[in-house]
Image (cartoon, rainbow, N blue to C red; front, side, top):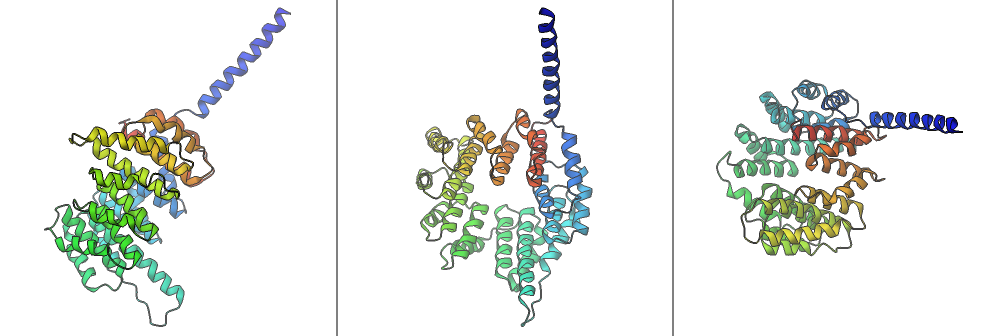
Length: 389
């Protein structure tokens, strides 16, 4: 009898040990090299949306091995978006001055639309102009004053309003960052857009002013919180967060949206409060503790919100402050049925998490959705870079 029990125990032990070893191997920590190799291979894939995702994230993981593939994409891709993103990264991350010239040339390529052009031709021209507007914004963000003449030419001669507005933004950004002389007329141009009768113009103005972060923008942007257009209001919330204004009136006006029945307002508020809280922490204002307490209280309430996106956005904002209260929410977000929630949770842990969070992410490298897999590899690599591993 004793012998039988020992044999059973022995077999159980072997099975248990095998399970533990196999389980640990299955979820062993993925290495920095493995992430890099997978992303390099994926950059050569046929899925342009995946390439764009990787290009958008490479600035946080500027490995020199990526440069060859990125320049190749810039030269051979038939997708204008992939081409532009590749050129942008080539200059911003790898200081390739030839890429700046190529972006400028793309911006100057105005599509020709015959008077009786079929709808498909008009649609292609519209898309081309959308990308040209992106090219103009890129020139402003890249911050090279050599592009001033090109941007001025677009403002004076281009036929497309979106492209012109983007050129205005680029010049305003160059001025704001001290790359060229102050241009107060640019500031007034965007402020006037906030009052335009067309909601699309107001929306664009709100977005641009948030990105420009004018020091006196809080009051005019706050007025857009009462706009009749939903998208303008939501974008105003995001933009007020980007300003990182610490004044009590701004915070009070934002917090009024915490109980809004539409979750998109609450998502925007959770994001904006995170940005403002980051500014509060580095502030020397005497009232910073009270301000931070108010923000934390709202974010902690949002951790129990009925909407998943609100919960993970609040968790990310708390994590950006070094507060890991919401990590359990992000872990649950990783198991969501909503791909957007999964990717947002992955990105939150990648941007603000620690090396210990890799174990939560690596379980998803076999996910059936390619964008989720890509996000996981990108964000694990970010953690390695951020932690100096």
